[in-house]
Length: 203
Image (cartoon, rainbow, N blue to C red; front, top):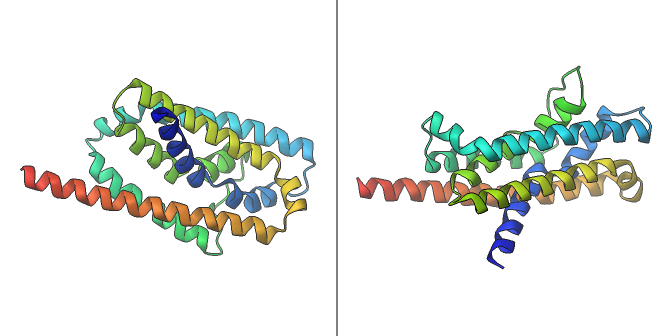
């Protein structure tokens, strides 16, 4: 039961950061003029790239922090600021990806930075750096793979969803997810500052 609760917690954080509903308007504009089959082909390629990114950052995230001598407390504060910036951007009128690369849109910008962006990477690094063992890392990886799968499944159904729901409804769902991200960001910043406070008293 404890593992299930942890898995759901990790999944909720990651799916909120990936926020497929906020990505739908951008995805639809990037693939405008393409038929459903070609859109699905792009989603499949982007999904594979997303899985690779999630797996790499989950498995070697701890070592990245150690290599750059970054503490968990500093990552919490810095990551919280990044997430808050992303949440505020989502609540505005701008789309998440402000500059589109003219090359392969499946990998750039759809897989990254549209889905697996700075917020997702920071969250994964934070979760893995705070993990206490192999089992917890495995749960984080499972949650990341599941969130990534759910995100690209929603993107694959984007044309169906936009027919069933108005674009304004899709954007409203994305903005609701932004509120969750803002809450996570506040928690990260508060915990980071608290950790610094504890460390100061220890020294």
